[in-house]
Amino acid sequence: MGTLLRTLALGLAFTATVSGCGNGVDDTDIDSLPIVTEDDKADTTGSQLTWVRPSSFPVYCFAYPCATKQVAEVNGGESRLIYKYDWRALKLSSTELATAEANHFNMMLRGRYNTVKVSGQAMTVLQISRASMKVSTGSDDNPEKDGFYLTKEAPCAKQPCALVQAQLVNKSAAPELWNSIDLSRLGLSTSAQQALTSEMQDKTGKVYVSQATTPAGGKQISQAYRDLKAAALK
Image: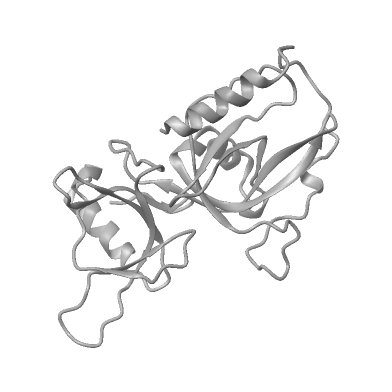
């Protein structure tokens, strides 16, 4: 996913001094950072809450300290190299944490950037406040082109009503009202599609989706994301 991220990773890697990754000493223990909060008044990072899509593309290390992850800020944001994730705000068990680390590229993550010193160098940490896992393994989104939305129940004063309300994340644009949604690309069973649609209509907003434009100009859901701890769709 993403020519931009590949260029970013390789460009930074090859401009580093070629001395091998090796082992270094962390000057800042990530666990010593304040746990991230979504309360802007209580925030200590000075960074905006941002939704990102991690890449599965490997980050090559040529000189310690090295980034280990790549993320793209959805809906037109920047691409970043990340030294480590900080999952503490999600209160995951050790097993859940290991699974999250192994599957981070299948998620949509929300959090704030922070900085730690590693061998005297400033490295970027993503402190995660929310994590949502993708629904379909048979469809891929494109963070550089797709629109990413939070879906919820559409306001309705008079019939006919929109099916869902969709709000672009990382943006301050007005919500969109969608009269229909095309979930066919996700390859879900009929019952799973119905369950997902119902969750998309939740008042509080439980499901995030990416929307792609088809060659014919139509709109299609390219991926859906549900809370990391949500039960599987049936």
